[in-house]
Picture 1: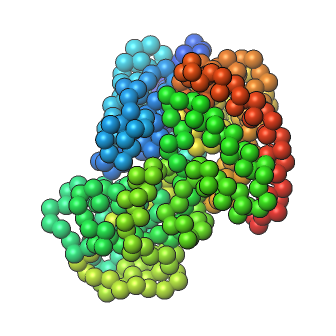
Picture 2: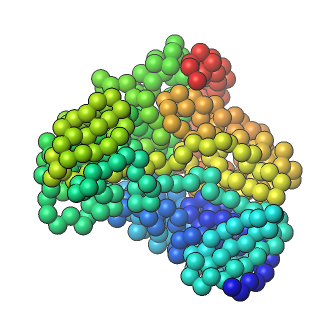
Length: 466
């Protein structure tokens, strides 16, 4: 097996959204060279493995890399997202990242891209091996290793389902839904997250009767109202932020907080009679929620343990089954909870979230901090990791860390300037001229309520079971 050696300033593991957003800022704000390694054959990370009908759950204009707009800046005219900022399809996202790599990164002469390669580190030595040719190369890293694998995004087509399925039964990832050639006797969607939502909406859009869909929902989830954050109207996002903090400052309990957030239209849930125990930043519109509520056969018995021809076994019981049903696996968790490492740690950077539910904005900001600040202590002070959400209580944890980060950024003139210029910053600028006065008023309300909100949120967190 041949072996070669190369040198670089930054070695980036992963050409997914986080690796691309980080690399984009380094290229534009420094003179550094970058080597990017990825297991996939194209940039885009998990988007390469996603189901054919996947779309962003956030406006296209606030996703991707800082230097290149994603989408056309329009609003959807039809469908369940009508009237709101466009949501790029998976194919559009992949094409976008391919364009970033081929039209922006590689022409600089400062980026070396190695797809279909596996990275390894042994004894401080960085190497990667081509999965196609077997060529092994050693990398001398002059500055930093950038490891984007903290997010470890999982999708249904690549994860191992955590339950047994009896021989002869059909259980497929939702990637296979467009290949259906013969209607089954019914559909069973397993999972309550983004992919479960998308599977149900796809089936309903293709004319499947709601009565023919069984939705296995181990836990009900709080979902974000997508209408509250639109890229063309930063005043909406700012208003939502302020109203949420004012709700937190006035909340008598955790239950009262979520009741206020729901009443204000910030959080939504499938069934008003069921208290959600899950929160992972999934977004929906009211129109999507209306469609999902047409499905009446929702099974809430915990996680699936096994599927047999005549029954489905759960942690808390069982329900009858039919061998002619098609089981649609949506049980993959987008992110898995992990120990939170320092973001800047000597010769290694591990990008994480620094503002609630914003992966590419966070990666871009982490890269700017790397370029603009000196010591690891300064950099880590600017980038406290916002925990990845799992439970409703995490809403508090995320908000507290994100607010503290925002306050640190506001005290630094360079950070304020970068935030104002960043297209990924969905609350940057005043938006339309007509909104400038309201934006200034909202910022004053934010300053007035931020302190009381943080005090109350800390009290709510301290008084809740961990």
